Amino acid sequence: MSFKYVDLFAGIGGFHAALSAMGGICEYASEIDENAARIYLRNWGIKPAGDITLAANEKNMEVPIHDILVGGFPCQPFSKSGKQLGMEEARGTLFWNIARIIEVHRPKIVLLENVRNIAGPRHTHEWEVIIRTLREFGYRVSSKPLVVSPHKISPEFGGRPQFRERVLIAATLCEKSTGALAVEPELLDLTKFYDNWDPQDWRLKSHIPLDKTMTKKEKARLQLTDSELRWLEAWNEFILILKNKLGENITHGFPLWVDDWVHTDDLVIPRGIPDWKKTFLTKNAEFYTNHKKDFDRWLKKWDYLEDFPPSRRKFEWQAQDAKDLWNTVLHFRPSGIRAKKPTYVPALVAMTQTSVLASHKRRLSVREAARLQGFPDWFDFVDQSDSLSYKQLGNAVNVGVIYNVLKALVIRDIDLLKNHPELTRAIIGAPTNPDHILENYSRLFAADEESRKVQRKKPEKRLKLAL
Image (cartoon, rainbow, N blue to C red; front, side, top):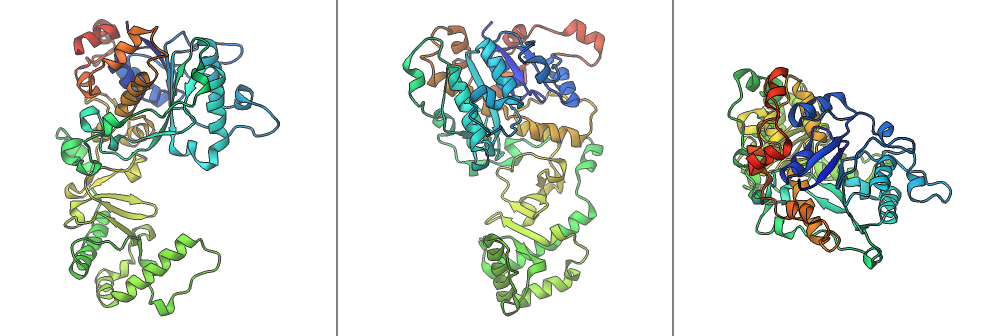
């Protein structure tokens, strides 16, 4: 056995995938969402406990002893009143329950994940409380946020073509009284995983890769509607007009708002609007004025986009020298239609904003979205709706990010972990790419309950088979 871990706020198991690929054994998982817990059980063979506030508090500790604590925790505002510090100041938040587990069990490593804004100006106070609390418990942790995105990680190390910036809080226990806590540690060095890789070299079709096993019914469900195709046909014609006028590389650099196209002489800027909107209104007016004859002809042909919803009369071209709209990746956003080069996609979110493969005139499938998060192809969403699966994947951590951050943490803090050779060997010695382990990782369950009882194998045995 290499190391034991607990998986808090586990979702569908992104942390589980990464740590199990390193040989870790999950001793406990918690997830309050019943649908996500169902998928976790189906794929990892562990039924997550529910409310962590009931399992870990001053009167109760159901979480077992472990070596590593991981979790993608929600962040609520902490109280700023009085002179409370650390644990007391975090009381009433979910971080307090995490801190309680750390206080009782003192795991060797703590790895927490959160959205980019946790380290932003609106959450300065929360960030300071988290870092201070970990240090009070004897952990080496940087006060600088470690921001990681899978699109920066080379595919050699399990990177993915998805721009998904997340903050990782990586802490290692100082078990003895040393000077380690008195020195601000450097951020983890991820250079090895970024070197010799340009994120512009991602190619979605080959690097996801696209799902070739979809049924006709699945494909039909993902196809664009007639209305969506009409919107895109209109904007594609617009892009071809621009290319003819401006050349191959369109670089106007601001979103186009058809409803605000007026001659510069007629432009009225409402009082009190923010500067960024004022700039966009001015640029749209100038752009329209400079190309009024061509734009009016286009608008007339498409009935002035009167049957387009307001958000579809807005358009943003970020595809540089792409041949046309059908050679891009598209996103139907509340702020408008956005076209990007088919390299990497934005962070997975809800079904309504799922990336559209323009050349295939369809959205990404659930399987393709799962691949973008690093889940293996045997990962099973059973019979739930696509919208629920997209939501779960949007809330999941990226497997390759966790895998490589944990490696970098152990390398940085090897001096604090020298008394735990099994743990350090397992993590540092894990294969370069988690994909190779996970794809060969045998399925926990067969299709029915009786087969599950017979075919289930212990995790450590499955790992040996995979290796």
